[in-house]
Structures are given as structure tokens and as C-alpha cells.
Amino acid sequence: MDTNKMNTKQALNLLKQNGYKYTGKREDMIHFFDKENRYRTAKDLLHHMEPNYKGISVDTIYRNLHLFHSLGILESTDLNGEKHFRMKCDHHHHHHFICKNCGETKEIHHCPMDKIVQELDSYEVEDHKFEIYGFCPACK
Amino acid sequence: MDTNKMNTKQALNLLKQNGYKYTGKREDMIHFFDKENRYRTAKDLLHHMEPNYKGISVDTIYRNLHLFHSLGILESTDLNGEKHFRMKCDHHHHHHFICKNCGETKEIHHCPMDKIVQELDSYEVEDHKFEIYGFCPACK
DNA sequence: TTATAGATAAGATACTGTCTCATCTAATGG
DNA sequence: CCATTAGATGAGACAGTATCTTATCTATAA
Ligand SMILES: [Zn+2]
Ligand SMILES: [Zn+2]
Ligand SMILES: [Zn+2]
Ligand SMILES: [Zn+2]
Image 1 (cartoon, rainbow over the protein chains, first blue to last red):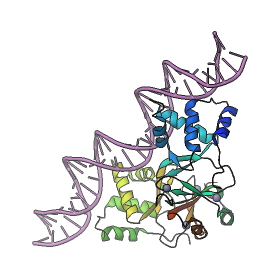
Image 2 (image 1 turned 135 degrees about the horizontal axis):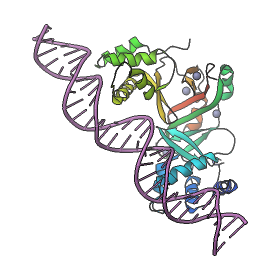
Image 3 (image 1 turned 90 degrees about the vertical axis):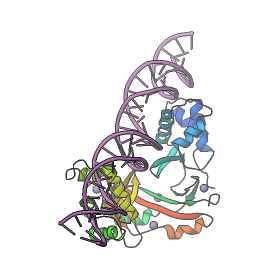
Image 4 (image 1 turned 30 degrees about the horizontal axis):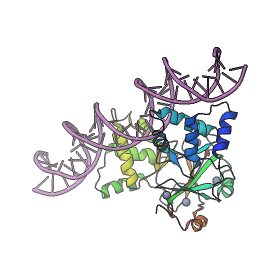
């Protein structure tokens, strides 16, 4: 399967375990990400929330996105200079194909880092980013 | 060597060949990138230019960065939501280790795409990004 | 029910980047 | 060397994303 990721229940538990409150807004935000394997922006989330929460503050969107990210509920990537978020994949290390049109992701179960760290022994390697971009079957 | 990239002379030729003018500002901008293998921001470039060109417009910085990028003089990447530029590598396809502190790059001559395109035959692959982050010997 | 730590709205603010428009200048040819 | 002009620049307005401050509100637990 391609969906071994954080779910709404785990996410709400994480909030509770860390002393954060369980609000209706947060439940809706988490569900927004839980129901799809897609990268979405703060603006996407704001537009999703506005009909149900008139006057919701943009700051609430950003604060919760960052909170969720810091708790490991969401993962994020920069696409075209804008932060995108998706529910965090919680199984073994992998990378993503990302659709340029809809943000849909497909897992790529190949990481080239093992072969590369040898070349970098005088460097301190902290992180890496490997993403493939294009169009998913539905969007191409 | 690790420096098979566009140089100042080639860059100025590209400008001329495409009907763009050769100004002192542009020469300095290109030289700023030519002299190092580092990713730099628009702000870095602005700070480099200001002492010699009092009152230089930020728009001149951005316009020329985009012009140079469109002519293939510079390549760019997003780091922490901010565009970074470096002199374009003009030899065979490769990737970069990038120092989080100084932007210094080291070429990585391994690309995992060959093995992966098979898994993505129902997708339209357009591009990919593979970058390794950490600290160079001088910064670690 | 009350106390309170945490959550939110509102608006100001910061930062990166783009646009318009008037002015200026490098390059060309006479 | 001068005139012409396409391209370059400066100035400041503007846009988009994201953060900060402060007063108010509320979920939670005692
Ligand atoms: Zn798609
Ligand atoms: Zn990896
Ligand atoms: Zn460094
Ligand atoms: Zn590659």
C-alpha cells in the first residue's frame, strides 16, 4: 500500500499527550490532510476552513500547521517558494513523486544516500531532499 | 576538478548574442557568482553591489538574476523558501551537496533517476531535485 | 463552577519578490 | 562624433507569504 501514514486518531492523541487542546478547528484541519495523499498549502487549508469557520484567522492556520509539523503530524516541503504540507508518512524512509498540478504523491522506495555518504566523509551530512516532479495519471 | 561551469566570458557572450547590453553592474554581478562555487541569495548580491553602486535598485538585482537564469548563466534552487543562485554547471548531469552555513557546493556524481523511471510509467516525469545538506569541512 | 493554560481574532509588521512608469544609457549607424 | 533607440535602471507602489503582539475567548481539569 501507499498509505502507511499518520491518521486522525494518532494525531489527536499526540496533541493530548503534549498538553494541547482538542478543538473543532484542529480536528477539521487534521482531517483535511488525513483524507488524501497530497501536498497542500496554507492557502488551500484556509479555503477549506473558511466556509465552516467564518472569520478564521490566517494566523490560526499557520500556527496550527507549525504545531502539527513540530509534533510530527505533518511533513512539509518547499515547492515554488511556498510551503506545502501533507500527513506524515510514519514507516520506513522513502521519497515522493509529487504532481505539479494537484500535489498528489507517490512513494519512491529508493534512496541513493547509502552510496553517497562515502564520498562525503570530510563533510557533515545532516539531511537530504529527493523529489520527483511531474503529472500524475489523473492530471497528465 | 569540481569547477566545470559557466565563466564570466561565456556569460557576457551570451548577453551580447541575445541582444542584451553589457553594463558594469552586470559584469560585477556575474563576477560575484563566477568567483565561487556557492549558492547565494538576491540579498547577498545586493549587499555585494551596494558599496560600489550607491542606490542600486532591488529590482535591478532581481531582474538580472532572472535574466541570467533564463539565459542559462545561473542555476537556482529554493532553500528555506528563498531562491538561491550559483553559476551554472555546464557539464554532465549531476547533483549537489550544499553547505547550510555558507552555500558552498560539492558535486554528487550519482543520480538515482535511471532506476526509478520504470516505477513511474503511468506518470509524466518532468523534473527531479536531489540535494544533500549539511556543513562543509570549513564550516562544520 | 472556577481557575487557567492554551487558543483565537484582528491588525500590524516583516520579508521576498513583482509591477509601472519616468528617466537614463549602451550600442548602432550615419 | 552625434543622433537614435532598444534596452537598463531607479523609485516607489504593490502583492503574496508568513510572523508578531495583544486582547479576548475557551477547553480542560481541579
Ligand atoms: Zn495530479
Ligand atoms: Zn533518502
Ligand atoms: Zn560551508
Ligand atoms: Zn539527477
